[in-house]
Length: 162
Image (cartoon, rainbow, N blue to C red; front, side):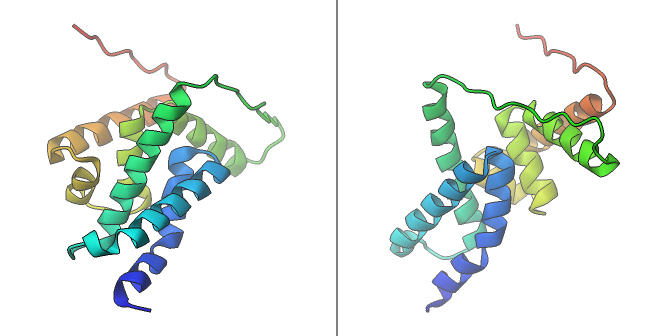
């Protein structure tokens, strides 16, 4: 196996973790990772060197955007929530964090997950999302403030749009 394929294979666990947090659905996340790997391996000759990790995250992010656009055209089915009042503290906290993340705008959630969960730099996230570094910093600050407000029981303020 060549070095490129070894690098791609080494990234699978991180891609799965990011995809699951981004898609919030195990099956959809697994599909995203599989599609990412297929595209990466088919396009190996197009990879000009550099950071395989950023390249794979870019592919996954773009596939997720396409998936979300496709889902927006279909009716939405909401799964029943399992609100167990007897859940342990860590379970309840995990659900609270999951709910807070679910209320974030997609771009903010992606930036937060890539930086906090995957440990990427602002520059790497900016390259993956195709935006300036300042935009990543703004998205991250807003995401953190929103999650903090939701976890503290505050109702997040609506932004004024002119």
